[in-house]
Image 1 (spheres, helix red, strand yellow):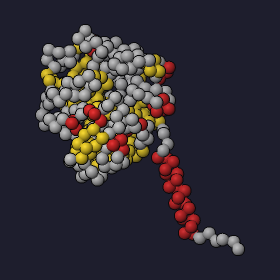
Image 2 (cartoon, helix red, strand yellow):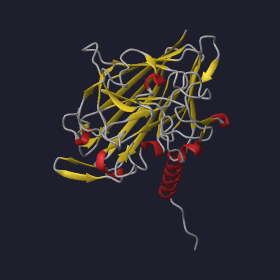
Image 3 (cartoon, one colour):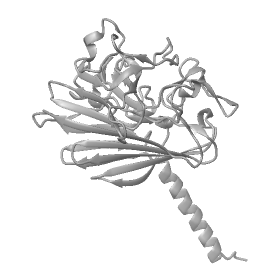
Image 4 (tube, helix red, strand yellow):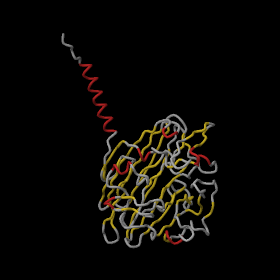
Length: 357
């Protein structure tokens, strides 16, 4: 006797098939573009990563000023965090542990005994969902982080939106909402800049100005000591612009330190964090943020990384300016807290303005 196939069974099968397609779509890695005039970006939902940013120099010549790879597969084996969103907690957590509300959380270390940039599989190593995309304005990626992921407590919904503002500004907005437990959140945008073009060599002649009169000193493992010290009279003083290499006699390995940003205009939503200029191209980058710190990293650990167009990035091939909460804040009560509770929203904003003269 033949079996009948009811309409309700048909709907169930259709639902399961549609759900299967949806799951496939969520796991699909794509490349997306934002473009307005001569200003264009390419991004991927793997790590919510920026792949390229093309803009003109003072003569109108277009160059890509972001270090990266030609293939998305190369990002899967990347140890430099090129262009990615890093978290749940960016930078380092000393001893890969912290205590919150009387509970000690032990995290899987991925840099010696410490945790770096959210662990071995942080947000730079996961596939984000594309929530919305309009080529001439923005793209929004979403990631739902689960309770216990890389040892962190609670479910957390995370969004990052990249926006083209006018024809020379890049806006980056990150938000995160804990769903059921308090948790630390400190997201960072780990892009490597070379304003002369990603294939131009090192960034040591770039002029940098940082609007931070103090730093959070670190030990030999780059874990903050808990102190806040003024930069005056040290190789870390970039309050006035000067070339990155100008004080390498005092700091031969380069820079990898968090600056405490000065509040030069109290009451304003964003504060100026940095200005970077490159003389040959005439390009200038200005950065604003709502976060209290910025990590200045001069690409000290890059070594023979094969990047876009087959170019090999050497040490100091790019510089990072990662606006953030202070590193290891979960273990230093005197640092601004990174704990976000259910019902609260973590908000992190960056605005980059590019000009060329």
